[in-house]
Image (cartoon, rainbow, N blue to C red; front, side, top):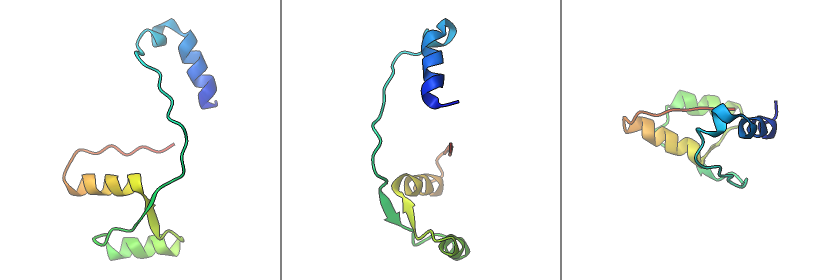
Length: 78
């Protein structure tokens, strides 16, 4: 199911829409890339490089830093 279809169904469903206080759409934007962290495990950096991954998205670096700082961190992916 496409996300737009799901959101339309939610807007029409009283048991869901009554629990949503705000709808906000964030426009798409180009990814922001950063270098691999210097303190990334060498084996992991090598494995990423073998897959052609030489940079991280900015949000991936922020997650890495959050985990290193010992903060509770939730990682999700579509």
